[in-house]
Image (tube, rainbow, N blue to C red; front, side, top):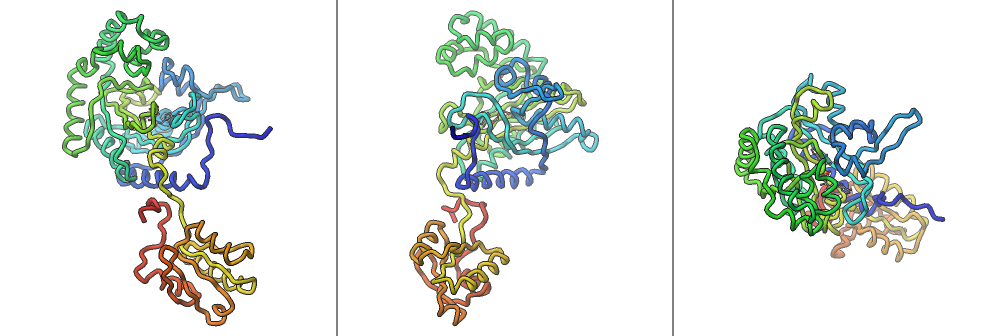
Length: 431
Ligand code: HAM
């Protein structure tokens, strides 16, 4: 039987990786502009870390973790998300002693045993950012502006930002009680999952996708009407900072997150283009998490974006890095000259391809087309003898005679033909 990848685990093939570089490079640019530095943490952690942070009663911890016992009898889990590991590292290395305000970003694979479908996988990739040490709502707005700026940077006007506040340990119990008494009267209409979660995680009924639950929760009490004065002021201030920056958003008071560590501001970037996998990025404040994990009482806020979902939104635009020149030869006698030109151009940072297999001129030119080279040149006996050749611009067939040297090809490029292909910094179709 042929060996295949594990269900829900994907290969990112060469045709696709240009899109990934484009996304990752844009994120690094935008995050570093905002003062964030990269942190790299392990893909596996002690299982207890995720139980204590994400919460025992969440779907992730209850049903979706890849956990196993290692040869030393330790319970280990492949990380289902990034925040817990990053905060574990922040506490373990006492980054707060250097400066409680840390701005950290990370990217890499995460693992959840979910039912795979378009936009939902068992190994998926997140790019996330976290800021610790600031209570001020200004920082919530900065995080949201940075997220908005990222989508602008990659040229997407979808997804759109939705925000909510989930209150704090002071005001949430009263909200939970109000919601529970509302749900209790409609228990018969709720799905089995929501009934099961009623005592551990009743808020999840608000974002259940089962039609009966959507119907049953119409008119449910709003968390925003149960915020304490501190949380209410915080949420108003976040909104007024967003208004000040003219960042578009809408309020979704039914948004509840699938992780327990959130307090106050929560948010999602949502799209209608990916079916039920509508969240392209999501996050919020977690003011109690660092202390809960054994660190000092330092607040935090952050988000993670799903790279596969962003790649799907970017669609079929081509992000490959294409050659600037394809060198064809008439025959074996010109291979030395072709190889020398290619070597010189590569050393000068020009992307070049040549024929490796001594194919016919016709098939070499087909390959130049297939590779989408910007220019081609054919080297025959006359070209070798004269030391110059005709460089053809493939888009319109315009030919420029120049010497068969690095300087010669650079002169061709310099004739008002724009820059070399930039490596994955913009979709090729827009260059
Ligand atoms: P999350 O909402 O669980 O939050 O995941 C964030 C994003 O990861 C989602 O919006 C989605 O784009 C992507 N994602 C999640 N699961 C999958 C999957 N199975 N397949 C493909 N993409 C997926 C967190 O993980 C929090 N740690 C975010 C955060 C950071 N909150 C504060 N800081």
